[in-house]
Image (spheres, rainbow, N blue to C red):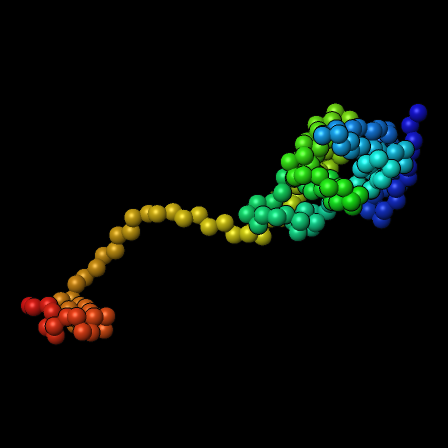
Length: 181
């Protein structure tokens, strides 16, 4: 049996949309069991024992501001991992970083088969964040090309300029007439 929800926005026609079916997946690392649940109303939760926190998908702005590295935008999995980390912190659960990454990896792999639309949404946010990130930053590409310049040498003025420069740089070290004609 399918549940329908009507969503009205000024930019979309009024259409009933099919809600995703409810599911619950588990990740068990070192006897810490995290439960990732979607309920009948479409809300997603991260649960540990009797505590649950609403799982929210970040916006593009959140993805760019939350990125720890200013060299590259976060990937879709890193975005997912950061949201899981925020949920675990909100539950007041202390998990080591590598164990948290294992939990996120387990949940991510299971979500690929259970809720492809959620994965697609994270990929969409990561793609838009990358587009915005790279459009705002100027990438400088250094190309070394041999340069040839036609020069004419004027012996008298070049000699005086070089002599003045050397005198300014090495006041005490050089005798006065350093170059001889």
